[in-house]
Length: 525
Image (cartoon, rainbow, N blue to C red; front, top):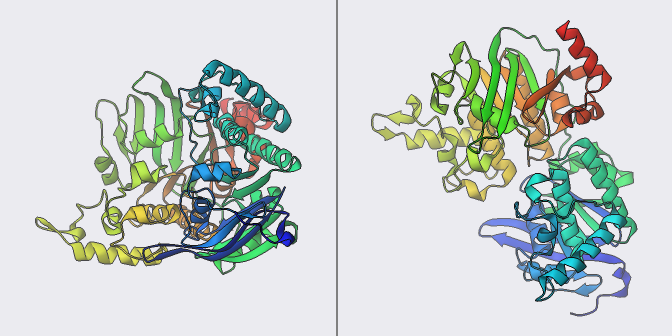
């Protein structure tokens, strides 16, 4: 290591000319960045802007092709994650890196046991974790298996892991994606406490309202370049969105009143148990009419995923009935996803990797998944590959999928562009009923605007839309009626115009506010 100039001694991180290529893709283009000690610094940008690559370089997943990294004023080579941890850098990933059947304590000390005598190490770790919990408001039950803890508590464990290893710089990647509003509020209090104690936080998120609420400074990336550094108090959501996309962005969903028509989707007394016998859906009843969007809010893991899977034919119907576009389905007449599609049902799955794409397929192959037997894609015994490629190219241009290369493997697209490919595939089939799971998860602000407009367009074309999202702002903006799920049950329904984040957050914790109780009492009387 060599000393940096004294003028930047108050910087926790400085990047100079960081450049990274993956073949023809220029992911990071000579990036300069300064992050002040003891601040919360936001990093925003569209999908494919290079944020994840840059954070991976800081945390040692990749090494830069060119450029230097300075930590606390010292030039530092970060060749791997071990080197990053040694340099005082911790990272909390969007998808938690926890062993589910280990306790919180076991997860925290895994790989940092600190000696041959495990009992001694565990006792020291417990004392240190209790101190950290008191200092930063990170209380967690240390002796309960992680699989039994809420996602909010699991996230606290990830933060404790980083602090326990001596992190002075903490990177958080999309940290609020699976949290309730109350859990998000607590997280920001934790981050404020960390900042107060001198920890530097780098926050990567698509949620501009969180950037405005939590950060001191923001850096904006666009197409691999760093295009702006701003003081948060001197900017706005609208300005940040324009810097990210390169044009003005409509942040509020523009929609008129719904005009609900006939019932296209009806669910009656639907129950479903997983292979281990756990009741995941418990007597679910709902209807969705043509010309309306019904939103389902809830903390991830409360039955929303199973509901979409049963409705789309992925999981078998066990108890109750479903009516899709006039076709009744019971457990006596099971259906598969191909049959459900014949009833003019489109399905945008929650997990694009597990359910929506095959990463080893080219984009044009992924674009026809589930629809590959359609006449326009086939000629006798052979597929019309040219027709498939041409159709995919046209839709990639329409939906701004980048890069617009039908031959590129789906694994090589950013998460947001993978999502746009899946959404384009389903919506372009013009279904009468659209099942939508987390439509904008991992998607940038410009693409969110376009996707929301398309969903509203489906409603206004007399389609029935069932929307599942953990983003309360999204549910409140798009839905005409909001249902809340908790522990496999629908625990409440409320018109969207009456909903607030606080109200929905309480309902997601199975606490019914007085307004909701009055609505339910009126509906039952």
